[in-house]
Length: 520
Image: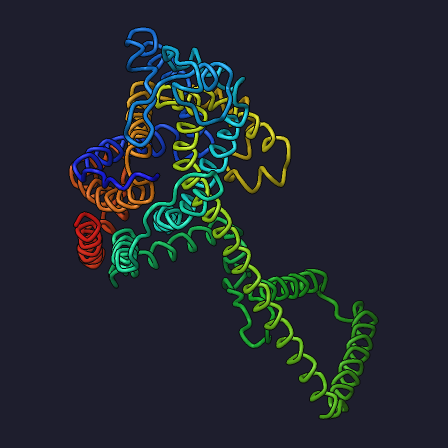
């Protein structure tokens, strides 16, 4: 029978407070240490999580009494351990009458391989980690990534009861539609943000900067060609100006033509001596050539006049049809880009919703069926993280289409080995340690909530509380510690924009109303 107990709202707030503080350290790691490199961030959190959880959970397994580290709770009741279930790995209904009662063994990193040997299905947890982390990275790339993350988290609550049926777990009580209406609507308003319009003065300043850059580039490229040509003569200096009546030819071309003509005229002046008779044959030849050129020009002009209006109309219609075709092709390309972008968002959103629901579901399933408690599951989930993610990262590194899909431009330029070296150089171990410690603490608290309370109710309430706590945390960070997370002036301006603050307040009202209805 499924637990109908409602989680204490104080526990949920404490869990999400830990989450918000942990996320703030994660933001510093991502923005300051790893310079927004998702690959470096994933490598850093993966390795730190594995080392940290192995040490902490190992110490707890060795130091705490077995009554704590080996205790198994099902439906809020501590149950006995049996030889058939916990030693032989059978899945059956055991009671002291038909099974052998034994002392429970401690669970942690030193017992996880024994659990995997009894139940190899536990390794499918690695597949969920690959889907979860990569889906999260994909959505973080989008301008509305936070909105998509919230939608995926809330959507996963619809999957829990179908998964309960698949995994043979009891069905949870349905959530009223009104709660979803207020909760989802309020969550969307709480995370969506509008970019404030730029003022006229800011736009004018940007235009002036562009003009200055363009003028500096023009002065740097071929500036000497734009200078007027000075011709020295005995009487005075003549300045040759560009001819402005040359049609569509560029001014530089006109200038070069004028320059060549004037240079030729100078040569002719230099070659003419005192006697005019010696140059008369040459003059006659030049006159003949000029006459021939004039005749050729006349015939060309006459041919242009002979072109019929129908020919011109046909050419215009052809050019117009080409423009229409190019416009249609451009629209088709734009529509195709929109569809592809939508698919790229929709697929990770759905996969992340499935991964979220599966994580909560398998936590309960592993506890009830495989007898893996919080110490055993979190050791398995976090300590083995590199063994799941690094094979996938190696695959991405060697397959170019996957590399272009999963990595941004800067990350594509380096190999996985280079990325690991860069991650080590960039990491602040103290900040990274605190970040993963808080996030892993949140995971342990989630496991406790999943096995103690109604699964659908827990996940829905946790997500709603997380939405409100996240935007409050963003306000605090941007107000008090903007340099700590390297927040830009544009980001701070967007955060404190009156419209965005109003939307968040209205959205919070919707979230609070849904939480009140849930806890009646």
